Image 1 (cartoon, rainbow, N blue to C red):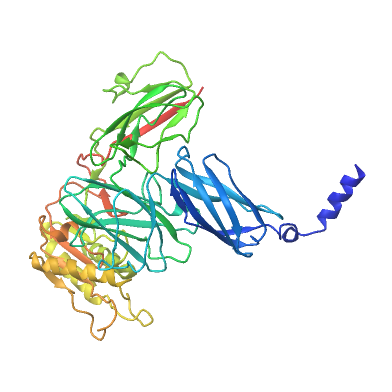
Image 2 (cartoon, one colour; image 1 turned 60 degrees about the vertical axis):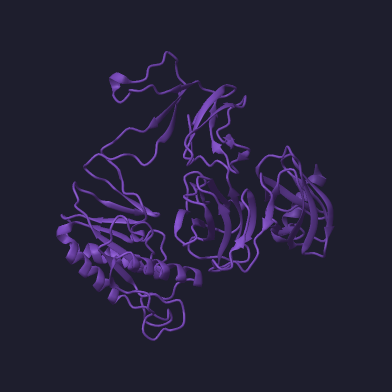
Length: 519
């Protein structure tokens, strides 16, 4: 007992940095993941790795072979991923003779892996890829990666990215699918399913060449902004209903949100409660890289029975608490109306201060050099206020100075050549389709023949059939008259806005809800 006591006293005199000074530090693991059922060479970099002896995983399925330290800062190893390995994130540590590293992650996916190759920062340099592959890439500061692939009309195209989930820097990704004319077919920033990581799925509108754009949402980046992009024909539902079930039971689930329509599956739930349980949907030989969460608890599950929109129509059960109730909010309500499209800004005829509203909306479009994801670039104005609104928008655009960001100017250049060319092309198409250019245009600001400078641009008299209405660049505003009814307050968020109106509208999607009651 005395020896033990003395040892504790002895250790207490040494500061923490001394005690842990021999601990190995892992900075990077490259690549950040691999395909199930494969072997791949992995390089681990960091500090104090020279006496590395073992890499161990907390879950079965991955074995580290041929461990070889190359000095104190690098270890080369082979990872063997079994056919039965769990898809998704795996936790691992590296052990040396003198310590154990902190936990790091390695990802397992269903598709063959290959590496992004620079230069691929423009449409002309886009890296050609095949579908049903996983791309391991890196986004540096102000970097944009482009990938080119072919698709046929009616083919499902799905994207899913692992970026912030790789447990590196705060990498908030943005992805988009564009057609051969560089117009957005679909975009994704944050998602309900994957939070800050992006996912999308669309049906190809026609045969041809398509492009994938990958970047950090605010054009950040660095030498450790790694990502894994899954591109293919896999199903990508966003919602599962019911949202959970009782442990040990078979559960019929309707997966919604995939562009091909609902997908029905019968799933065996685990024997024990698991609120983090998930199911990856498989269809036509392709599987979703990330699962849909299905909450498994020990309670019986009661599913709503329609109609149940009043207390008298309430779904009845003879079972006693604790219980779980599953339902869907899908009927028309009088509180929300989907505006649709990109970044709508409605200004109604009873607005308190028309000039302030138009000036504020237009000015918001030009913030951050017009590169904000929530810029309200589609302005809808009532007919009686339309001419005045156009006048104010033009004044706002002309008073927004453009130039060297080190000088006394309001906004600077576009982030890169690809975005610059995309904006100019969209302005050209607006002119070609007959929209009225009332401010700005494709010419550079006076005195700035070099650099990616674009004048703040305003189009008027934009009609529903014009491309400008569907895909308006963030440096330009498309304004059109609209006869408005009801009363609305517009909220800006993401790439579209919603109005809370007095007239009934429809919820954008069915919302799957699960409520658990305990005694």
